[in-house]
Image (cartoon, rainbow, N blue to C red; front, side):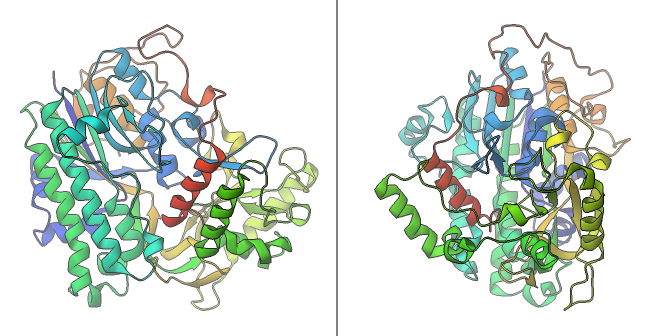
Length: 531
């Protein structure tokens, strides 16, 4: 039976890759395209990785797995923790493959921490990881790698911490990726696997801060692309392409090879801070303590505050005052990572809600109208290209926890990454869009009859490996990849199997401690997901 090799470049976009392919800079990706089928892979709404990768794992949109942002709120409070694998409120295909006895090799797939148990194979968790916690399966996998003089570095590539220092950032990105490629190639050769799935985040991180040197839709691209830094940025893509060649060298003739991205990218020259824009519009009020404690949310002051908290043992005991005055706030940003979502502060639903339910539609309509028609005073353009009510986008199990308002940024804009309400993009020069990438190679591959989506990956992988499934996917089996005869066989979701029956996000166990949450938030801030 065919195995599956999945190579994902986080954030890859054909608008960036096509010029590199035309230049001959990505020969191994080009070889896959020549052997198979190339198309656009539709991501999720929201478009950030912390919603998209759970959709990859489950085969359902965020409305059915419940993750809309990088932080989840403790019910009845304003306390938030970074999301983890246990936050996913739907079954993942990892459970199906383990139940079927299929060996898996998962490498840096986001939101696979803590590692699912039981798990059949080898896993090096991806996403933001707290130091000192086991992030592998089996737990002694790092010891196995050490015996082979190999190391898997966690986290890293926090691009915002290298503000306007491209060489230092690129050097770290190259070194971290180099070590991970070596480990990946070793495990491909030395272990048994039916599925090898690897995610390469250097593409996403580099495009966030240096799209100005690699993306043709950025106005500075022409002058930057052939510069020393521009060539160094291109080397990040060449390194990832070289890895494709090394991984494909381990493929059998009948293996299915998939190249995908979880979302695409567009350049930006202007940025928005949605909470501050809502403040300017009169819908959000910052507390007086924001002036004092606001600086503790980033930079050197935050690092000092963390050390004081650690020394005095204050984590989980003393919280910084809230930066928002909820008693005077009608609307706030509820997708902090990309600014795509706004929630009405509704009485009876939200903690400290103030908007009367009878006024909900009126207030939401006003906020939508103000946001949709806001014009950037510098450019004369509207930063919001599309705006939608949540019920027009989300119809599913967790629709009631979705943001009330969803937005799509206009070209040239990011709805996040600003300190003021609106400003020129500084170090950031790119952000997410919904159009990702896919290339499929295999004995049954043919042109796509219908546009493929990220939620199609889970059922397609399970069908390719002929594993009975308990995953209730809303995606389709891509028969254009696995053949028209491939089908899904259901297994009883309540049965006791080798993989267990619990849905990850349904447990009561705390995912991380307060100290670990603070550490993870610091890295999320370094990745630009939290201002």
